[in-house]
Length: 164
Image 1: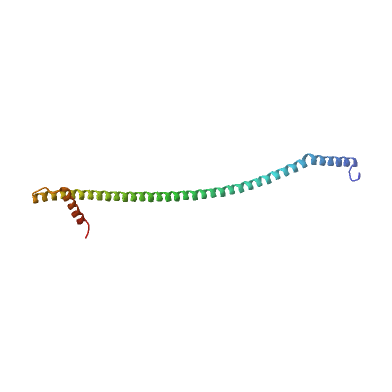
Image 2 (image 1 turned 135 degrees about the horizontal axis):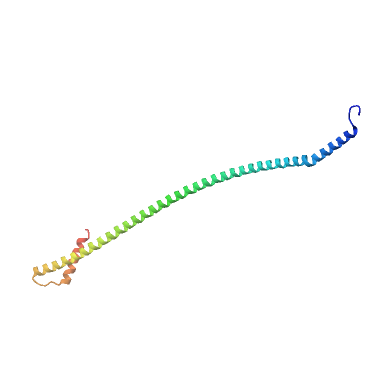
């Protein structure tokens, strides 16, 4: 080998140095760099997974939000419909009460008119009876038993009131 210009001692020393440097670089540089690259790869994968999960959660939250908005819209429509229904019922109740009060007022008025008519008729009968007694007394020139005469006039007037 010396003919080739290679010194065996230097070659062995260089080979030993090379393997020592290789072992040293493997321990100090290659393993930490690969470990760092693997950790970085895992962090990136974990970040991508978290981003995907966050995207799914955001989509679920959006769907839930839309569901709640739609539910709130339906509830609002139901409340409005219920309020309209209640207002219509209240209107009907007020209208019914007003009609009932009007009928009661009509009935009371009719009763009052009937009572006043009877009172007027009775007053008229008494006046007629008094006038008849007075007239009979003048015609006969004497006093007529007013109680008997009143009875006769009342009977006559009651016969007039009854339809034949």
